[in-house]
Length: 108
Image (tube, rainbow, N blue to C red; front, side):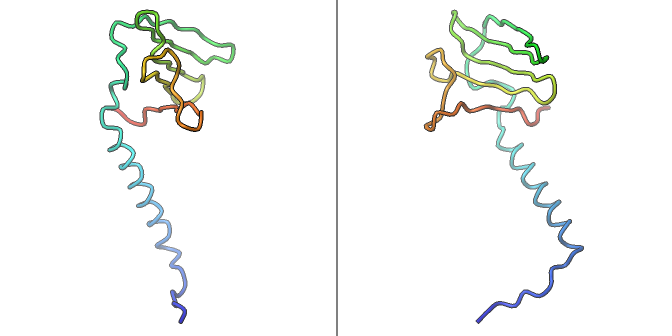
């Protein structure tokens, strides 16, 4: 009734892990599509930048006085973005009330 799988090949495990990690990385890059352009229109935006006490830099992009995008560049780590996709002046939340944050994983 049971399925006998035998011992795990210790040499094959790191290779499988490496292959899985590579596939996930490629899938993430492929899903980034137009990673160079933000999903909101920020052409002609007024950009205000401020540096926080911990070294983080916050850039606010306003179009006609309305906040459309925020870019946060931590003192350590990769920059991330928050967007107002529906144009109401507030950063968008998903259905659970959590603001989605976007990281640029790869660009060329």
